[in-house]
Image 1 (cartoon, rainbow over the protein chains, first blue to last red):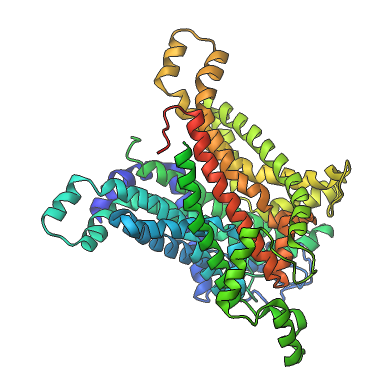
Image 2 (cartoon, chains in turn purple, red):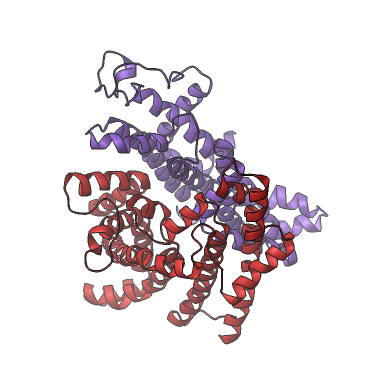
Length: 283
Length: 310
């Protein structure tokens, strides 16, 4: 742990003040999401807290951003949506990079027919328009969070798989791998213990990219009615707000847009900083 | 070169087969029963069976799959279940409106993003560069949906520059397609201008550019002869990657703005369980995708003499 703290990439990240600001914002969102998950906060997202379309007031914290057309608190709903975003982002990014790195590692390390098969598999998935595959899979796995997870996991592994495969093909011939082989280590052990850990720099960056991709796609699927059911999410809020805009009520769309913007922006900036810090070529 | 193209085209065959297999399995085994979707839950078993025979769903699965493959080879995808219209006619009708949005969108995005990338790259580290790149990241962080909703509200509802919804062919088309094109450009600008900036930064720091500057070449000459020419390769690659998306059409943009393009066609087919349309669309897109990746590799070799196709 101490080694990690003093390692070059972490030292570089610690010097980057924007990366630190963004990381703290992400942690703040994560804490909100966690407290919603544990039921401490924002559990009253269906509760009526005032007249419909109340403009913001500071009297009650639930009225900070006003109410929607059913008199529900926009602030509470926007915060609750952080839970959905984090759940979707974290689970699908984690499964996406794990499956992708494993398949990419196997393809790059074993080569030959195994490689041909995995390359065929991702070329095929890649040739089907992404949104079509997502929509088809959510139709099939059912609407709601489960369908979203299935759809994202089936498509998200492709990016990390391609990149890890390329990295592993380069690493495979490195001297330390050859000596591990000479010492009689099994292929699987070499792959898991010695090759894949050295692709962590691309895997970490992909994790951040997929996290953002998941949040943005969830919003679109929710708008199409295929996303979360019965709970608020930023996509559902934006969709609802469309009708309200015509009446000149913009608090709901503003709340959803800016809550999502804050999280996605910080992830984007942090992913850039991570890429710089992990790039062995830059100083 | 010819051997390369032939080999890549042959490699495309198993990929297209994979695409057909995935679509076939997804829709024939896992999706809701299309016959029930068409007739509703109150239909009698006899009616359901009759429609199943009419759609050919009573045949063994392998025959249905072979039939699908036959359709690809003969390029005759039959008729839509929902409207009984030949699918080839539906597709050629949808292609026009889709291209009316995507082609101007791609051209404008590329021109603007290359200019911004060039400007930011040549001012690397200065305040203007940082401002442009901050704007690009910020632009990438706003949801697609928000651009559409806010664009419709501001430019079509409040200030009545454009039509909110619908489509017309002929000259009046611009009122309907202008807003979706603007949204497409804004959405693409963030990512693309960052990409082109990194391309130009790399070119500006190359040794031969430094030499040219040191020898007193004017900035215009350096820009066009030494930088832009080399930067053409990544620019072409980036544009070629976007080519398949010209024909897929944006499902979201088309459905929001009521553009009767291929995206709308697909969304309707998905909603009505119109399998023949979905299958035809998927295969068609995957073929375009494969051909454009091959073209991309060939073009790469044409532009860059260092690249050899093996």
